[in-house]
Amino acid sequence: MKRTLLLLVVACGCLRLGAVDVDKTEEGSPFGSVSDADVANLMAFAKTKGVDLSKGLELASKNDDGALSRVFLFSLKFRTLDDNARTYGQIIWSNLLNMAEGRGTDWYSGLVARQPRKVQQRIRDFLHYATFKEDPLHERNLTDAERAEWQKLFPKGYSFGANDPIFSGQAEQLPAPMPPPGSQPSAQAAPHR
Image 1 (cartoon, helix red, strand yellow):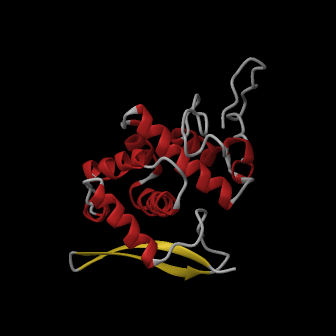
Image 2 (spheres, rainbow, N blue to C red):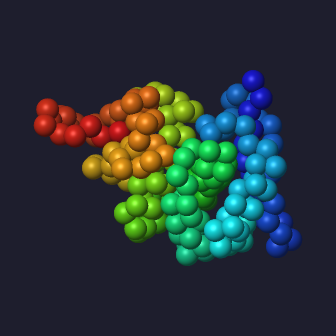
Image 3 (cartoon, rainbow, N blue to C red):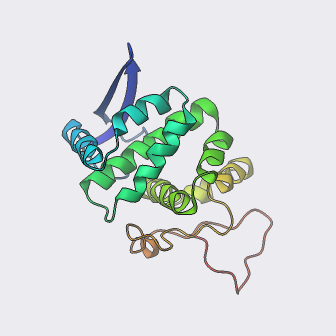
């Protein structure tokens, strides 16, 4: 199976998004294979919506939180998990892996939490979907410290796919997250997905 990882590279002030092959031991492509043509199509789609997504990603890679917030806001332009949404999802997934590694999960979680409610939901849905497509047992394999970090990004009350036309049909196909360590799930509590 051919797998790809979307890379965001800024060199000499130029942004280059590209798809590269990766082997099965690296972080993969939970949204499916993404080609350079897919990235070009997404950037063209964004321009039809009045958004220079390429420039936003370039600025975000230079630690511009406002630019990353605008990239997050663009998530609301999608209505289905079509090729453009899948490509966007792969970019957001790669963005989390790269930026959280460099600036920390607390920073990334905090930036997501400062977004409007609909944007928070959509970005969390993209990331939750990617996480569980990559590793359905993700939360079961976390240490307590890693689980605490995870719960900052996906706080209590977050429900995967809630009122989200892209992911509402996906919610039943992925496992429900585990409760925080030491907590007892309430029989009356809504499922946290």
